[in-house]
Image (cartoon, rainbow, N blue to C red):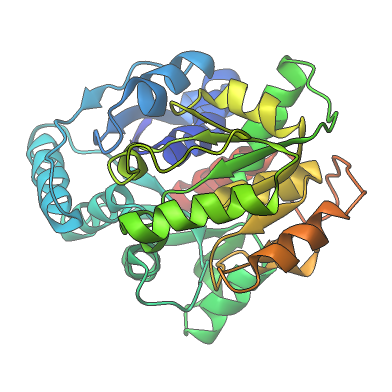
Amino acid sequence: MTLVLDIIVGTRPNFIKCWSIVNNIQKNRKFKEKFNFRLIHTGQHFSEEMSKLIFKELKLPKPHYHFQNEPGTSMTQLASFSSQYERLLEVHRPDGMLVFGDVTSTLAGGLTGRMNNIPVFHVESGLRSFDNTMPEEINRKLVDNLSTLLFTSMDSADRNLSLEGFNSNIIFPVGNIMIDTLKYVLEKNNVRCTPTNQVMLTIHRPSNADSKLKLNQLVNQICQILPDRKIIFPVHPRTLKNIQPGTLLNKNLTTTKPMGYVEFIKKITRCSLVVTDSGGLSEETTYLGVPCVTLRDNTERPETVNLGTNLLANEKNLKEVINSQLKRSKRTISDHQIPRWDGKTGFRVLEHLVAFYD
């Protein structure tokens, strides 16, 4: 009997992460015979660059269901996504659902699934920043507690779940599913790391982007630290509304709309440094060997810091940290740096799902 598996996505990182699951089901006979998947798009990211373009680039199928985004707070969106999904479940009930990461869409899927007695499988479980002021941290913890199986990307996640009392029988180290997609894009487009004097800057976290004063001061500080570098700044929709006209006048700064995934990765491989507040991007730069500075006081991905490819920074030590990272010379694409970051994570997830249902 073929089982129905709902794949819940809503944001750019979700789209990137789900590619490997979709690709493995479509191309692997065993998985194709075992699962029919339904791609459920919550509509959390709805702009062309943040959604539709990535589907086209990665040749993802058109979502089977695409919910209407409800503008407002995270709680407003959570209620909207959950109610729309629950109405779908009343008509078409799946045998299980996959959720990714830590965004509002992830929690909406996990909560609705659990309340309707549908097995929930969480990819990227166990990540912890230990900062409960981050909405993502709350989402991670809640979704882990709602889930039937927990799929982890790194050893620190396994330890976190163990310390929190989760049964080891439901924890499965599978690797980093985002690296599956990254490897595919690199190989398909024959991309090689060729560093230039370019620097990539991305900012979207509420702690950095929701204050107009802090955001504009932070960007200008980075430009002053790097006067001889060309800084590329793709502006996230939530960040754009807080950029004050006329304040970002540095001649070495170029602002752009959000980029498609392929274009973004190509640019990253040509950068000498990435400055960001994204967790996922610190993983991609670690895999690529591109020095990264994360604009946060903590990270849920400590392996990237342990390897030295990523360092944390704030306004007080930013100059020192940036200069330190610019001195890093090693740039290599290496599968062995962190266990199971090898492009086979999606396959391992599906193998565990087959075993679960059998």
